[in-house]
Image 1 (spheres, helix red, strand yellow):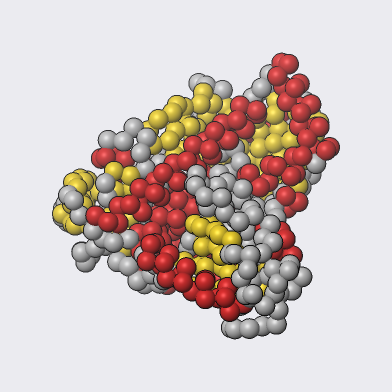
Image 2 (image 1 turned 90 degrees about the horizontal axis):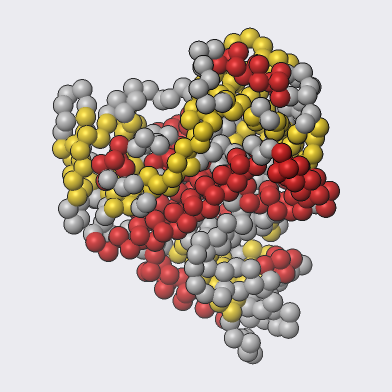
Length: 513
């Protein structure tokens, strides 16, 4: 099968690749997705979906079913020396999002939902097809595809490598994968367990023998994963996990019946570049890190959704490269922060001696004072993570930050994001409320400007406290959202399709007078 000129080739049909492809096909852009595997991968290394990742999936149309199938996780518990030293309430610190809990769902189930969503939009995944060669020109990429019938040469405007930690796309580009491997190997087991541990919570047992993590899965099952010392014989993974559970867990934990087991070596690496010309790297092809905090799949999905709208609106010629460069800089910044955060968590798991005692004391104090609940959940959920940008913004809405998803009546702010640029006009002024026409006119003018700049259509929504004025307006009757955002007068905010603020400005003090 060939694709029309100007299309995109996505290499890899995991969550990252499927999200990129979905973003393109739902905008009526030609896309082809291939995977070297003969069928979907049956195993699930990742299981946790955090709110920002869920928000990206919602914009792709896949979040509703995932929420229905998943298990909400209410808390995380940290143990050392057989006692709990800290408890982290997940939902307590997740303001500004409709998704109040992280979700537990095996990666294969998330992929299943994404595949069906993509196929319902008219897409087709080509399994058993690999990328054998890659050659770029100024405005196209020549790709040699390995199939059962040979190695045909195809032309594409863009290629996105979502083909995992051992990415052939990254190797074809010659991009360094900077970083190193951890000494530990991790073994995991998914299945039924007999244990009094709360099923809808995560449990982290830190001991001198290594770490043991227990997380509930849908259907009453559990995931148990453990760190293994270098050189451990892995011929009986189920036995290794059970032995570690008995050694490191202070309460009964017995694996029952058939278990799905696996092992993996953990690395902390970031690609030196996330794009080379017209070829991009996303997901594990661009960054890999410890499973601590369940960040990997979420970061890849966010890579993909952020890239998808850019490619959909990009000029297929040389001009489109500016958006790709901006995406690569933003997402590499995120990847470096996530790798650093997960590395700190992993190092925390394995501290010994006086460092372990300091860790336990600090965790206890942070939990008792509420600091742990205020700081850690938004960081794990990546809600507070911002892209580097210039501009002062308005209140808390500055360029590069995520627009909080606040509820106004029976709608949420993110419901206004339908794939286009969004211009929000905030019309409440504590001194003057009769300024709706002027705010609307200013918002319409700004929408035209940013639609041209980002190559996307633009929508305008006015947020005000008066009576309904026009269809699509949002009522902030008490001014609560204005206050929460720190907006004290008329203002305009430009939001990208990935819910990131691109621009914010105050309107003049004499507006409407």
